[in-house]
Image: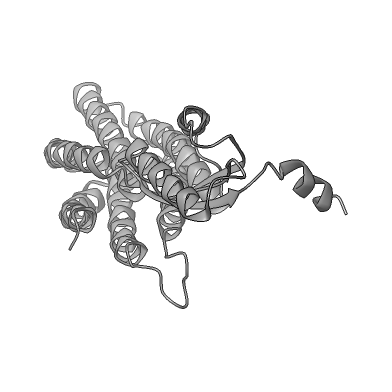
Length: 297
């Protein structure tokens, strides 16, 4: 089992524990904020379980059915995770509005406070762990998971603060108002997760800074005369680079192939955090203009 999958197992274990504790106290106390946090933890559990499945299959080698592998499972998992965050935000929004309208009283305030303190400690440790794994692997699913639990950490802190205020002032409307704020924040945090996943599913190119790195490398290669048709795309922790390399017409195919292999090796070293796949077309002259004219017909 790879480290990314081990990270999701840890996430599932933590989420399961938090669901049981928060749900019990949330139902007993009638707190929208605690119940919302419990529902969010339940969705965290579902997301982490799906991430475990996605990561297990995304790392599989290409085969006859999936010639390019299953790397797009990673951005797909991120889109699903962002969507689930949005759905949970709608539920929190509904519960908060209901409580504002009907003014349901709260119970077991001290137990709720203790649960949220416990939740913050556990979630903080999980965020730190996932952030370390995300930096080490640059895996999109783990990064999304870390961001997800980071939003949980902030929302748990807000819930604890609100419960403390309610305990001091007795003003219970603070609870549903906080629920509204948490719902909006959850929507806000889900947007970049969904956006990045969708862009990867649509084969978005690598970041401009990374593309410039590739161009700088190719511009310094003295064994090629020029290059064209440089295309890139990302799929989770995988990146794909295709380019036409132009050689002097006197260079043999064997020598051109050796030079291409050297450039491929340099590209892989240029992005050590990714699994780099390259496709190089070896040209004896610059045929970019000819190909452009043919594409017009």
